[in-house]
Length: 106
Image (cartoon, rainbow, N blue to C red):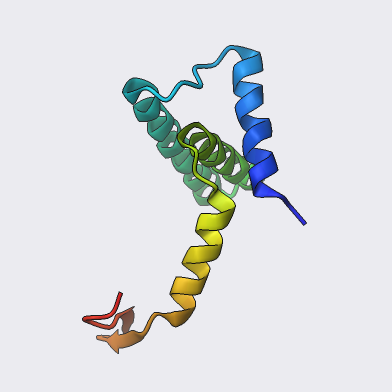
């Protein structure tokens, strides 16, 4: 079993050890989101081109997300567990052949 909280700390420490900006400044947080966007784009490109690097690119996405969570003091593990539970209880309706959240339901 993977301990995401532990991984967050390891990823953050690696940023610090390698001299990357791991501060909680507005500019750095903006850069982190840009890196995440870039990694998602690389993952899409790998998928679209049928490259065998898709898994590695998806890992990069997760690494940047976990690093950002650690910088911001967010436990991604706890947030995922809460969101899974929320999604289990969410009610969906099929409209025009597509499932959408029922109106008036969070």
